[in-house]
Image (cartoon, rainbow, N blue to C red; front, top):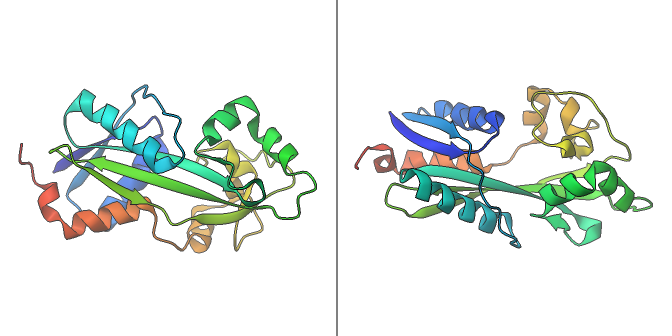
Length: 200
């Protein structure tokens, strides 16, 4: 079985990716490793993900994955984009709601980039299609193990009347009909079976 390290501190991401690998019958084991990676100041999540994956590859010198997400608010010209983590830690989701006061256009979307560095040091980028929704007018503090971000307490996916944090898995899948970065990676590995062979 091929092992690929996922450089992340988020167990939920590892679980989700392994679920996709199993769905596509890939002989693949996703192993979580947390590293204190430097996040560069970049304009896109793909640039950040590539930098993090390169750093992780230097540590492990074997196939490794890293990802990064961005959050784009239409009425703010796409801000904060890849700077969402900094915005959450400084202003919090209350700060986002204050920016949205009196705004009629509350549309926003998530975008995630996943980068694989293969055993030869080549990088491969897989990006989500935008996950559109609207920003709620108030915070829903519902506790959910499926929520990876504070943003899930204020983000209502298109096709739903609930914030992401309140939605069960079936509801999330129903309104999230798109090919995401995890699925794209697994489809690519399916088409490139040589990448699952140990050749080092």
